[in-house]
Image 1 (spheres, rainbow, N blue to C red):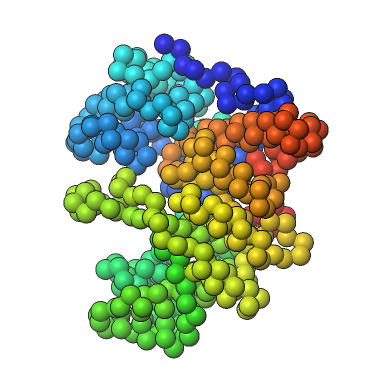
Image 2 (image 1 turned 90 degrees about the vertical axis):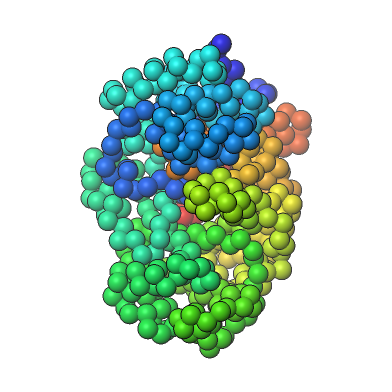
Length: 467
């Protein structure tokens, strides 16, 4: 059966079609947040089959296969790659209404020329056709990036990384896409985790500053910020599961650090005090470098303890939390503002109930000459579907300024997930076209086309590269 995808997919009015063809279709991609491994980009190794390319590490798909009743052996277990692909093919027909139903078929069509619906009946033929194409030129990791017209890739990197592969890619004149590191200091902030002391040793080794004291620890982090900046880093990223903030002195944070180094138990208040101080300290470092700070808020992680113990974290057992973010976020941003060191900041929420909170929070902080200094980030994770994207943009437009929005990101580990940008852009074109044709906005095709270009690419380029 031929797939449902047409040239006018998700474009339901004439203005939307015109905007897509004129402004969105051929835009480059500025993918400012993803989880692509820079080593895989550098090594550019071929994939043996579609399971390795398409299902490996993709907890979005794993989660849905579990919901469909697929046994774990055919998801993350010891089943063959073909059996895992077949399990995904069994699942896909039941995903109508889920973005993976759209994305999967878009990826098959764009990268492999497959315009059939994936199902148990078509699985074997699609598996063989795609695997054959993977053996041919044009299907290596860098080829997928080039085919997708990606100008910028922002990876997610631990401060203790040597960034060796970023350096190698920067020196490779044959590869034109910029691959920049993003500073992700979870190891420093989650002091309560068992791995904290081992991470601290790595920080000491890579920074050359022995973290025997809290001041030395902060100096080591500053050294890594400086190093990331030298290697082209222009952004940080933070996993903020609960946005709780309280004003904390360095002496208070240092006392918590010493307790942890002495293997003493930490209270919830200790953790909040330490993390609040360090977040503010890091924010000041970012502001000094003119970096962008990204806050991904509200994930409730590893809900299934037996499965976490069996196959590890980040394997598809996370969900949106319902903790309040407004007060803590306001206090945190205001604390930096009072110091004159609030960096450009992108706010992401996992629970759509917080859409109004973040859209409203944007307007509380500004900087002359910096349009959209505080951003309400694109619909994230459990929200990055058609309805979620529209809800996020409508709220942003209703209480803020959609025209300065920095747009979509993949947040993915897959080299063929760039179709998500096309998905997003189609939704943008359709929304603007709908408003124009309903008389809710100016029906000026050139003006709206430039707005599409801005949201689809140009705003993000200016924002992250301070242009």
